[in-house]
Length: 241
Image (cartoon, rainbow, N blue to C red; front, side, top):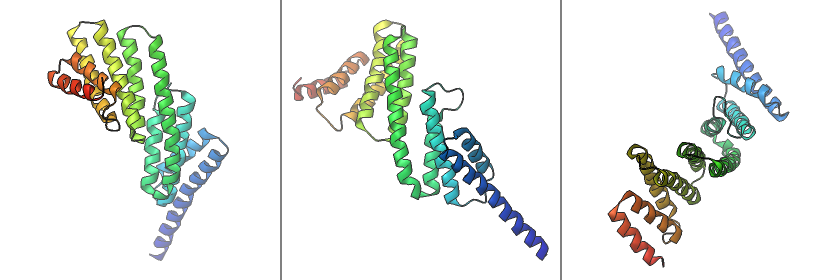
């Protein structure tokens, strides 16, 4: 019986040391900017992480999240399979859930990730200006919206809601101004309704912003929403419009 207990202890200790060796190796590769090798080590560590401490597990997810962020920056939105932005976000969140001492580091990483998301969103806005046709233009704006929504998950900001309002309105306008097809116009309606939500959130910080109220009024007129039209006309008057 004692031999069996000793064997279990030995195997458990060996398993723990084996798992930790992947963590240590991954961190060493990361420090040398050998990101692919580090990713392999961290993935291997996750596969056999049962015996690791919460602190060691947190290290895995933090460093792997940083590698995903590096991949996102390098790929500039051209993702073959996994979306590194989503993966980075999930791993960094997981790190703080396992060990909240990583929160300051993750917060700094989120600032970097958020900046990347907003830069990519801006790039899609520039691409839309050069595109032709409803489908191509709205498809590019959809990608901008996706980046902005991801950025909003990282940072509560009325400015991001303003960008989302503007982009959804722009997509709605593209459809509204270029087709009378009833089915396609439903897409415009969906964009406009999303725009209303985000513009209203953006208006919390500046209730009498003339630009926002004018945008809300224009959307309401295009949707034929009589009650909203009356509401925003009154607000526009108060805002000095």
